[in-house]
Length: 383
Image (cartoon, rainbow, N blue to C red; front, side, top):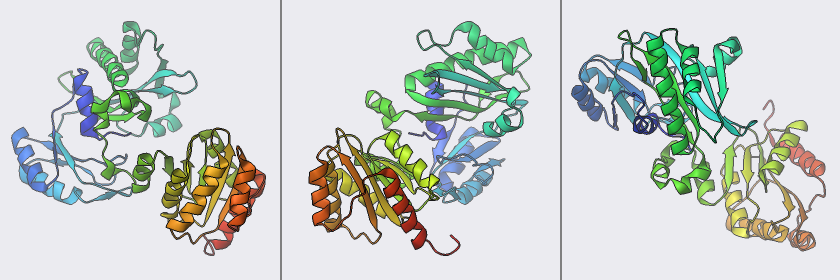
């Protein structure tokens, strides 16, 4: 679950990180009022779950409350990477001397938290990694002990030459790690971490992504979820107990198990197709889950074929087969469905499908090849 900047700053502020004050506005008039309360130069920042807000015109400086109102009027309702801006954060403008980058995230290889810091902040860290990878310092943290004081100081030294700034940065690194752990985050990022001409180190931007598996233990953070800022299909999938990620292809995939889903998408690519989604119905699926999965997949107009690839271990293949039949009774599906079901209750499942006029394929290669061929045939010329 991604948080808005203002929500991430609340978490940072709670951990003691020096974050400028600010308030959220949903109308231009509210933005004007907040700017008047703050006084002086303010920044009006679009609140959407994506990067590149500044490049899209979603971050503007305002010298007066009236200018803040005008900027908010232009930003609210703006489309940024397919997301509509429904609120803006109004926060004081800062006198910036330098910009740095600091983040703690989960290192999948070591299965532990890892810090990434760079003196080159204020830009995409991916750009820094491509153009100057030596500018990034990485530090793995042993979760048994947390970030130790000498490690925090090493990170501060990697960012600044001035001992005064190094000490401030070291303290912020410790606070950032605390925020990361307490929030159950998979990412906690400051970009930029600034210094001011007066020698202060501050976090003027904040990004936090929460591991969904942590939310049941942190209901207060679960309340931060903004469903208006996420694709409708992902909201529907989560409410139905499905794992869904929208992609850009035309082969709709319905699979059980994340590993099999990834392998299926790889095979679709291998045979020249493009997956339209990652959709995992889980290991204890029932017919209703399959119905919901098909509703989500068919809501995407780009889908030209639906591919089922189910390996029945805990999952009963007859449940999946019944779900497909039930879905056909409830919703109109005007694209072909190709199916591979193998495992628990396979013979029953195959009879259910056969009685309904479906042919089931026995191998992944066969079913994926068929799906890709059908999607290719249905795609407009030149697509």
